[in-house]
Length: 113
Length: 116
Image (cartoon, rainbow over all chains, first blue to last red; front, side):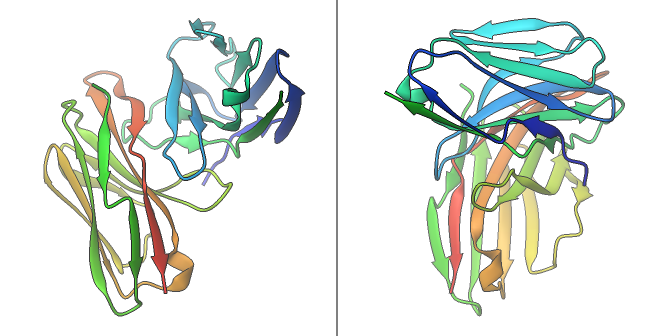
């Protein structure tokens, strides 16, 4: 099935640095979701976006629904060691009523103390 | 409460065994999903139930059989699995809005399945 283009694939940063990752699609989406997954656990929802241009924050995390409706961005400010994990973007196409979520391949984040 | 509960957390089964994975949510969500996830890969959709009816089957082999007994429960029955079916199996649920459709999906912690 369709997958979203998520980049970067991995990031190695120092504690305190800011992080940016993004996701693009060839189709118009009406929902963008950002998840964090720790090893052996299920994905945890970080931020949900439903409107083009929407900018939403959750603590040090900020995500935006792109104005073209084909992309989304996640920023993490002042990273800390517990931010380590895999971050997945996910989205639903406009007009999809059956609930199929498309996932990006994930961004593996490593934070050095 | 945004909790989706999956049992068991770990399962080891032989290729001739029959086992079931269970998922429960009490958020009133009317869409429920099964995903399969291999290490360092994104979740892959297997099945979607909407209002307790199967709405999507992503060409999953018949050795996986889903069941939705009621709006809070989702089961995945396993029979004659292969070693390559070893993976993390995730359940998720979503609220369904009348004109919008499903909203954000909340995932359980998963069942780590090993087929020997």
